[in-house]
Amino acid sequence: MGNLTENRLNATIAATEIAAINATIASITTKLPVASLDDSQRSAFKAMDVNNKIFTEDVLTELAVSGAGIVPPYINATFIGNDMALYEQMDGIEAALQNLLQKVTDIKRIAGHEAYTAALSVYRMYDAANNAGIPGAKQGYDKLRERFLGSGRPADPEL
Image (cartoon, rainbow, N blue to C red):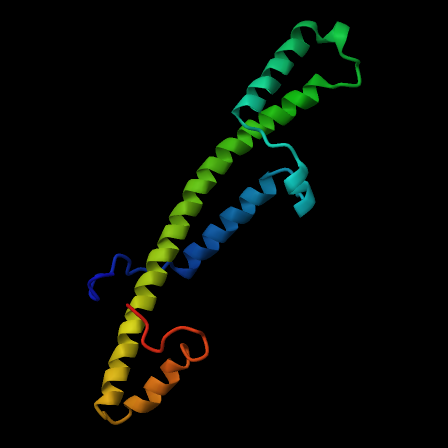
């Protein structure tokens, strides 16, 4: 924010819209299969990259063509096919959600940047007013300065 008056976002979301967004997220969550992993499973489970996906599709094709005479009946091709179909569905949903999450992250970053940069400018004004001996400025400056004391950050941060 090179220009203090620049404000890329000057908006809020109505409480009813926030409620609708949260309801939509909850609705999406209820439509997904119940599943979760712990941290050890997240690192241990095999990932599906492009080569693994092609291999799995090839296995499904081979099972359909000649699997009955080669693979024992306890290997269920339908289960593998369902897992593959669910993987592809989740892949599409994940891509859409990642785009949405990037938008949310960007909006959050812009809003935070603008608010904090403006707040730093106000802090500098209190500092200047305090140094100039303006009545009432010292109390506000001292209160705002606490943010930077003991944090390892300079009491005069860069904008």
